[in-house]
Every structure is written in C-alpha cells, then in structure tokens.
Length: 483
Ligand SMILES: *[C@@H]1O[C@H](CO)[C@@H](O)[C@H](O)[C@H]1NC(C)=O
Ligand SMILES: *[C@@H]1O[C@H](CO)[C@@H](O)[C@H](O)[C@H]1NC(C)=O
Ligand SMILES: *[C@@H]1O[C@H](CO)[C@@H](O)[C@H](O)[C@H]1NC(C)=O
Ligand SMILES: *[C@@H]1O[C@H](CO)[C@@H](O)[C@H](O)[C@H]1NC(C)=O
Ligand SMILES: *[C@@H]1O[C@H](CO)[C@@H](O)[C@H](O)[C@H]1NC(C)=O
Ligand SMILES: *[C@@H]1O[C@H](CO)[C@@H](O)[C@H](O)[C@H]1NC(C)=O
Image 1 (cartoon, rainbow, N blue to C red):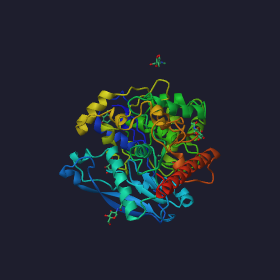
Image 2: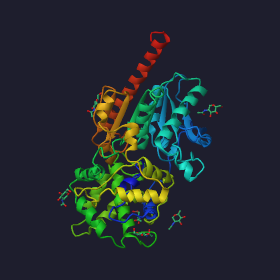
Image 3: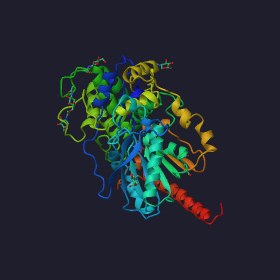
Image 4: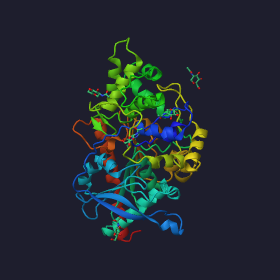
C-alpha cells in the first residue's frame, strides 16, 4: 500500500511505508495513531450562526433514491455584511467545518473591508453533514457532488436573502482549495473568483513526480540547517526500541516509525512563521526548532534519542502529555470518508526517493488496488480527476480558458510542489512565498506576521477587489442594457 492513499492532507499526513505488506485495518489504525490534533478548538466568534440545509443525496441522476435527503451544515455571519455586498464562501474540505472556520481567520479579517457575508459550508459525509451510512450511499461521496452541493446551497441562500446579484468569491485551503479552484472553473456563473490556497491540483495522474512530496520535506529540513537531521531520521528509525514513552507497551515497530515519521512530515506542513495551534500547538518556525533540538545533542548521543526529542516538539510542545498514545491516537475529524475518496477519485501517487531523509519506497498501485477492493469493493480511478477537472498542460489550458483564480502556496509546505507555482494569465495568478507553509495566508493575521505574509495577503485582497469591482461595473452595464 502506498502512502498516497493515506495522505489526508488538510490536517495530517500519514506515511505507510511500502516495504510493509499491505494490511488495511492495520494501516487504518496507524493512520489514527499518527494524528495529533489539537484538542482545543478555537471558538468561533459569537456572530456565526449554524444552519442545516437539506440536500439531495445525488445531484446527477433522477433515480428515486437520488432524492434521499441529508442535512448539510453551514455557518454564516452577516455581522459585517452590507446587503447586496459580496459573499465569501469557504468550500469545506474533509472534516468538521467549525474547525476549518476557526483556522481561516483571514476571511474574518477581511470581511469588514469588503462588507462581506461569510459562509462556511461543510463537505458532505464529514462532520455533521453525514447522510445515513450505507455502502450504497458512500458512492455519493465525491468532489463533483460536493461542488454541486455548494452551488445549490449558494443559490438558495442568495434567494432567501433577496441578494441574487451579490458577487460570490469562493475560498479554500488544501483539498478545500482544490474545490474552490474547480468550483470557479465549473460554476463561473455562481462564483466570480476563487482563492485556492495550498491546492495540490497536480498531484494526480503523475503530472508531478510522485517523490515531490517527500523530497520537499527533506529540503525544508536541509535548508533550515545542515543539521544531522538526515542521518538522524534514517538511523533513528532503525534504532527503534523501548525508549518511546508509550502509554501502553509498544508492540509495533512500524507504528513507532510512522509516529516519528509523521512528526517530521506534519511539522514541515505547518512550519508557520508565528506560534500556531493548527495540528498541534507549536512555536514559530518549528522546523528550525526541531533542528536546534537535534543539533543540541552531544555527538555521542544516539540518533533515536535525537529523533525522539525532535518528535516530542511536535507531540508535546505544551508539555502536557504524560505519555504518547503511539498506537492509538483517536481522530475527532471523521477521516473515514477520506479513505473512501482516496480509494475512488483522489488517487495521489506518493513515493519516496533515495534523496530524501525518509526511508525510500515506491508507490504501490497494486497494493492500493487490492486494499480498496477488499475494504470497499471499489477500484481506484487514477485518471478520473484529470478527466473531470483537467491537470495536464494546465498552463496552456487555463491561459485560454477561465479567469479570476489565485493559487497561493508556501514553499515550506510539502504540498506546494503539486500546486500551481507560475502565473498563467493576467487573472489566473500564482502567489508563492519561500517561507510560507500549508495555507498560512488563510490564517488570522497576528502582530508578529512577517512582511512576506502580509504582502501575500495584500495581493490577495487587491485581486479580490479587482474581481468585485469588475463585476459591479459589468452588472451596471447589463442593467443599462448595454449588453
Ligand atoms: C431558504 O429558505 C427555505 C425556506 O425557508 C429553506 O427551506 C432553505 O433551507 C433555505 N436555504 C438555505 C441555504 O438556508
Ligand atoms: C503490527 O504490525 C503488524 C505488521 O504490519 C500487524 O500485522 C499487526 O497487526 C500490528 N499490531 C498492532 C497491535 O497494530
Ligand atoms: C512532555 O513534556 C513534559 C514537560 O517537559 C515532560 O515532563 C513529559 O515527560 C513529556 N511527556 C512525554 C511523554 O515525553
Ligand atoms: C483507543 O482509544 C479509544 C478512544 O479513547 C478507546 O475506546 C480504545 O479502547 C483504544 N484502543 C486501544 C487498543 O487502546
Ligand atoms: C538512488 O536512485 C537512483 C535512481 O533510482 C539510482 O540511480 C542511484 O544509484 C540511487 N542511489 C543510491 C545511493 O542508492
Ligand atoms: C504573478 O504576478 C503577480 C503580479 O500580478 C506577481 O506579484 C507574482 O509574483 C507573480 N507570481 C509569480 C510566481 O511569478
């Protein structure tokens, strides 16, 4: 089984080393245990209201069962809204929408300036927006259904608010960023533009080399310092022993190595310039901090000790962990849906080259297929996403089609290598920061934010202002009958 299947990439990344035989339930367990999700969820401001919108289970056929209803959760705030003003919609990704909302402070920060309505829509089958569970219903969990949900909900909302002419801008991070970009391409009549932050839309169909992800993590640690990080990781994993302060006796070396591995992968993803509590509470630039820990050991120290101390930064920065539940970290975010998506449409090959600080492994298509058939009775469709949304020669395609999309990326983020890093046209642009991490731009502004981050957000706001003012000017012309 290859790691690609297990990368749930908004919040966490999990590494299943290909040299271990595929074993679905084991890997499922190991995915859970590798997560270290901050337990304290930031509170949403008082002015958000929660609603549940009835959606059809299936938008694309007219079988009686298509009309089964599930209730889609969405959060809304009209606190800053001037009626008729813009509507900013977060296209929810694989998890609880409140969690995304509380980690997307950017939208709250800019709402007053735009006098915008804020809406966060939960992705079907995640959080509270779960249809009744049945093997049959799972077939309706996919990105196209999710985009259609967003379109239908937005139209209904605008109608209810008697604000049909309000321009809608969609925003999202990671898988949510892919959805935002695809939404703009598929539903240009509903959203005037999209901000797609850290959206790895080229991670499909081998458009980028499958080793990009791991190679970039290695680069992060390498560029942070020429520390002995490389040998530390490689040898540390081989020296595994009872040293882990595990809550229960550690039975599984694989589990322990994945636990270590995840600490490095996840820290690279959230290498934010200020202290943050996204996947776990961490200091500013945690990669640098990890390197300092590793360098701080005397030369005779074992690599396992170094690796363990570095991993403890990720798992125990708050100092409140009495022991590590290495073989059983629980998951509050309903990841099960992502396994399904990875087994059907979200087929993202991942391998690890021998240039990396991790153990090399190949992407294991065959193992993945066997797992998916066994677990869900489905075969992955590796070419579907690129057929549905495109991907190959994306610059050439989008240069002549589409407009008003920002692809933002931070190069510290291992997912950046699979994103759009070049300007495509005057209105499909790439905003790339060297020191940015996984959708750093979508986080709330802080006083300590570095200039490059402020500048990235300023450019995003300027683009959005341009889209909106063009929209109103077109609208005026239309009303005057000049079209
Ligand atoms: C709009 O109002 C109708 C009628 O009250 C309601 O059924 C629907 O859920 C509302 N739409 C949204 C998006 O809340
Ligand atoms: C440990 O790993 C082996 C091999 O992957 C697996 O068969 C076994 O179920 C694992 N044990 C536990 C307790 O997870
Ligand atoms: C977490 O950090 C605290 C404070 O440094 C320490 O006392 C504790 O042993 C650590 N927990 C683990 C499991 O290492
Ligand atoms: C894992 O954690 C869950 C929730 O805390 C608990 O119910 C379960 O018994 C644990 N499993 C093991 C094997 O420790
Ligand atoms: C690394 O991989 C490349 C390409 O597969 C191969 O040519 C090279 O010999 C390998 N290097 C080592 C040190 O294994
Ligand atoms: C794309 O264009 C903008 C100006 O519109 C510029 O600020 C930005 O640096 C360009 N992006 C890249 C990756 O060159």
